[in-house]
Image 1 (cartoon, rainbow, N blue to C red):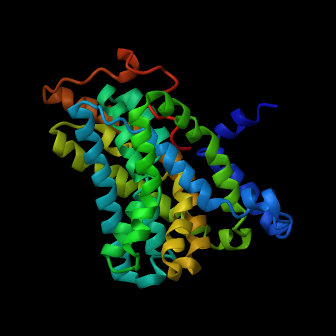
Image 2: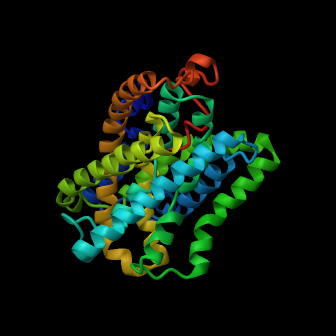
Length: 341
């Protein structure tokens, strides 16, 4: 049976399908995974360890020796993703309070909107960008995990996070970054963790969820996905193009939510227990946004690439050779494409 190939046919399926399986198990047989020992430790209570290990491996994929254009693009895209998500979360909180817009609390909005899908970005960069766009994937790895979400919620006065908890959320990534740059062989080994860990992360998260709550969050999850695509996809396209002084579809390629973002509500609640009541709903909403953005964002980037090409040609702006055509990356992969589901 080609289980993996089948899972990959679905947006973020490598993480989302195990999440749904874990949720099914917890809904139908809530005590099955609570038998103790290694079973409970891995499949029920292993979320903190699995998230930390994922961040450790993710940090190892970030290369400190990158060209200026690559760093500039990565920093700008990461900043746009964070600032737009932060601003959107503050706006919705000011207008609708903790209840949120259609049930979308700031925890879900900021956590989902500020985290991009590295697989989709790298794939789109290979098709519509050049090698510097592909390399920017490594910088975008910085928005993995709960760090930026904690910063945003704390800065907006919506959460109370001790400095030690904020630092603790990024230490695994920093250590991974150091090891990956000291020894490239370790980078290669740890990069494989980006493929191995998402299914386990997904199942463990799902094992703490219930389908009853997911169904109640269905419409709001779709809305969250649409907000992410429009805010950090379409809006980022215009802002990024203005900064680049040319129409550049890669600005829209960050309009996604990564599968790993489903771990953010849990991680945030571990640092500030006041968010605990929102975790299950926020996780369900984020999971829905992962699927919605994975489908819509590539379609939008493809359309914007055609529009950008016509606009640039009409203004005498030379188009860069796509990375796949220049040989900067293989047709089926690119740097860190396995970083996130």
